[in-house]
Image (cartoon, rainbow, N blue to C red; front, side, top):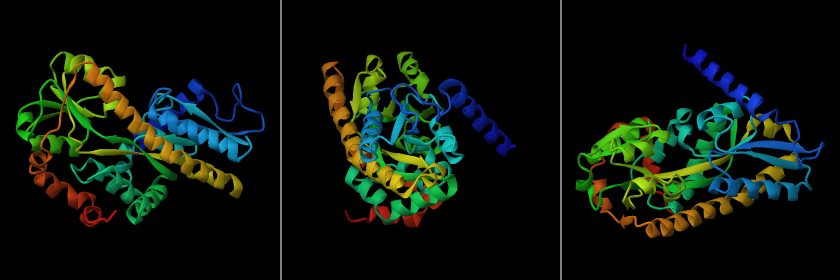
Length: 335
């Protein structure tokens, strides 16, 4: 039954790809008849951080191949949700993506480590993990499981917590209804903090805050700005208990179908786009904070140690599932 449901999901996503966007081999304005056109999905609108990454990749790929290869960017998850995008790439019905790593734990459990609270001390710690032995092993496992090849890593960055209450310590979240993704680890974490973790679809968050169904949620500052959540909240706590990376990824079958020269160009273009994409998020977060402060949002720097003290039960439950050895390696990693 599960296999049948998964097949139906992929089939429906394929209908969206074919009916809504057309076959990836069909050229559009500005594309040459003899070009290789890579279809690339992002979950955000034009101009957002992942679009900056995608466009940098596109421009560099065209330059490296003398426009033999180019990229067609599809915005706002128009080809399917993030999990469906990985599935489409796995069956070679979509070429590329730049998106959140969130669904990757469905195939490789160790990627759920990014939902563990306060596992990473800094973004440098994150990238040392992803670019080192641990990250390389996990990326290879993901490729083996999904037929999706990781070319590089950008970011959604650290999440903040927004609410209508000033959060200065863990005691301030006691009893608050905090929206989380439909993610058991996030639910356990916020319940451990003393909050009432409330799973909710992102599309319902604005109304939920407006109507008092929830008291707060966690997300990046850039998303809080672009989604206009600031209109229905008054405070933001820079808690940064989770970091969300984003892979630059390509269908393994598509990659293998390219010549050695074309593969090298794809790899080099991703290497070029990677630091640009990371910086794009940091710039947009800085811009968002300035904007939100201008809108009257009050920022707090909560006592992180008070939150960390509450996470023992979360690690006791989840470390064995994710991999205690992997977690210890990350904690002890020198960078």
